[in-house]
Length: 132
Image 1 (cartoon, rainbow, N blue to C red):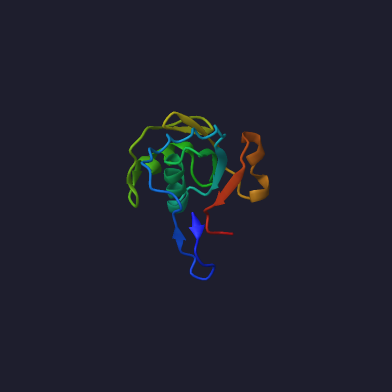
Image 2: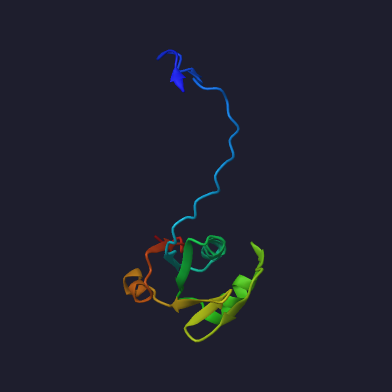
């Protein structure tokens, strides 16, 4: 292409148009998903988890909530009155719950300084308690 004027920025082809077959997309490089921790598993924390599950580049590896255990986390995620029923599998266990086959560690620390995010490799923490 050749610009006819620097002011108009109009482009004109210097060659006759030719048919073009687009190339197939190049494969993207394999990347590790970002490991996320969620502090607070109320309405916002559950919404963050649901959205993260839809994104292959994000993996929730831990949730901190000192007020609820994994059995109640399972129940709240499955039968959410705000976001609707969860379309997936949720199973609670001792110190963790499993969502769609992925284990999520449960912490119950009151103070953010006491949450051992590094023990599960968290890269980023989503603060969803509304306290901070």
